[in-house]
Amino acid sequence: MDVLNKFLQAEINSKEYYNSITNFINLYEIRKGEFEGNEYIIMKVDRDNFIIFPEYDDGEAGIQIPFSFSIYKDRLLDAINSYAQEKGII
Image (cartoon, rainbow, N blue to C red; front, side, top):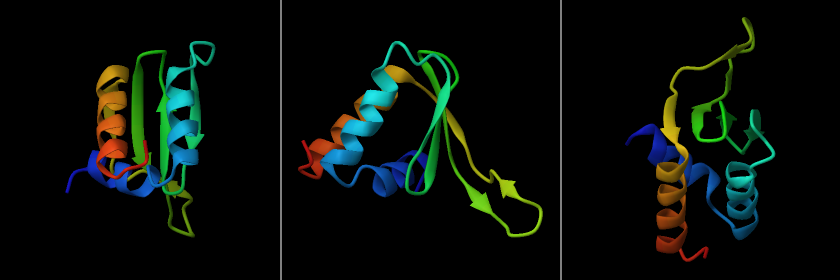
């Protein structure tokens, strides 16, 4: 399973999380920033580009980022909306 599908399963599990994540992605006023989900961080690089990664604290050296992927806004929203519709969230 790829990182995008793991992200969708971990983060898009309720209407509340769906709304929070899509609002963060769509807000024009937020040009850069991070959204901390249950297991994944959504980093907004600019208004249209995102990096998504799981956050892993190894307890010794600090935070590690073992897997990440970059994705364009429209593709990310399409994936989130398709998954939410499939699961009956929206």
